[in-house]
Image (cartoon, rainbow, N blue to C red; front, side, top):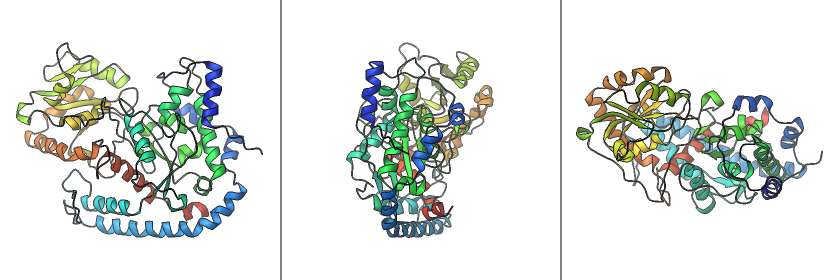
Length: 451
């Protein structure tokens, strides 16, 4: 079989020549249909076939792999021992921050895991592919979590290794946002450009390197904050089912698997500066609950239909009234409603954390970011979609004492959602990496080789 590799730039120029100017367009689709359709047998066979030179390279790197797996084994043992300590404060020393309190499922286990990550975790970034599809991404507005992470991995020094044999995971540095922007022709419903870009890229790295075939992608990860992130991975079954997918659209009903996939926080910033944190003190937060947002998806339709303009305590708007500040409303409300839109994630969750307004997650199937570590019930309220009509009763049933505890915890959890430049320990960049680290701890490459 002849392996045909199409570089992303070649594909981009081909599509641009065929269709002319390529622009971004938001389109809803059925992910389950894409999964059922799968990909051609020839494509899958091409991706998974072993390439001769790679077999030799794999043999020579087996001793490296054994050493890496041994170090991971020691880390697992250390974290298990730390988890036995049930104190609300970590017993480990740290000059910057010591995790403590009920915002963590187990502060001691998290701290030990974080320290082990800093000591051991190495990420190899594949150099194949060219901008704008690869090695680049948006650093502002809605999809900045995707772009900032790619930028940091490309230009920063944290966790990255240039020796693939020393890596514990391998980053696939494509940007789904850029793919949609440059490879999708609006209003055509033709997603073939995205399909070719992903398939050809996996073909390329499987042909040039031994690491994808060694684990069938289980120690590889991609990251996307675009709604189409899960859909894009479905073009390559092993990418969808085996690789670590770091996604804002962390929807279990669309194949998100929390044991191997990681939830990515959706953060919307218009400038490089860290937004103003905090707001009115609890005693001056006069509004019980607040939401303002467009009619995107059935959950928001239900929310607006039930509460828009109908209650003085639960203020729900499709658009903020003239002269009213969206930001100031969040900073003066006790609870901020965060319903899913077209997809499960919403930037309002992080906006609420910044404003110290207790987030109310209204969704079905959404896995909040860093749930392995953070106990979201300690600083947020989660309301199933079926209970939208009962939101006021649910919030009114929370005692003032309990509300004050939740609100104080938001101040503590903020550090884990801050987008710093350069990154600072325990901030959102490090927490994303920690989520990937935890999922790498869940696998042993030797076990995959023996199956």
